[in-house]
Length: 282
Image (tube, rainbow, N blue to C red; front, side):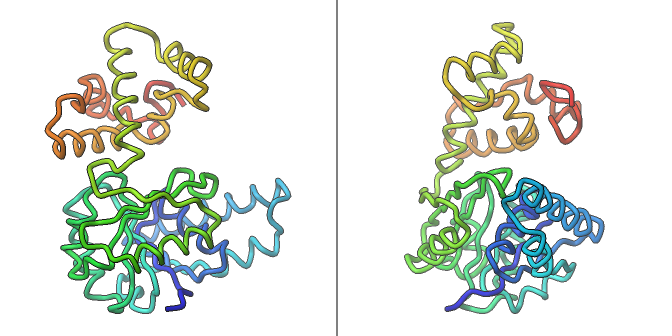
């Protein structure tokens, strides 16, 4: 099938970024969210992002305006009935995603692939909820989506080869590099990343080093572009906690036990950049 219209559900940071890259690549994008203010904020975010590319000379003003013209915000899920491919980017909650995939399975055309931007939740479970498990896969973009080139494609237990190939082809059209991962908790990226972040938080809690010292060691000693605590603040400490809980529940291994300091900071509402305070002040 020829894919021309992309549906994106969820107008938060990830959803707006995903909508932007598809629109930049020439696709018509229907961005869905239950909140009108979220949709307005997402459109403004996309416009600011595109304008930065214009200011850097990597995008023309005409291309920016054409990209914005391909972005169509809406609040009704039924607006996705005409979509050729759908990406879900709502809150990282298994029950909420499962309910959405049940609805999408009823709304979308039978040949449409349903992709989830989840960073840790089982694609197999979402596929079962949809009623079309062979056409459900994970399409995990990295943040910030317009800049980061990696997409982690996750194959559920029943995901077909055809569905995976469609996703690989779309990633190529976006100029992204796709890597396939199996449907295990955390996939590849977060199964490796989150234990490192968690251990860095333990090191802070136990007084091994300050956040600045730990991040400096990882940047200068391990050649990481940013330290694990800066990265945790960027991701959101609540998101980190959610992923670690999925890893611990999925594997039953104590090595994934979230650090008590992380739990305490999330309970206090110190979630990182988005709240102005995490391991650093913003």
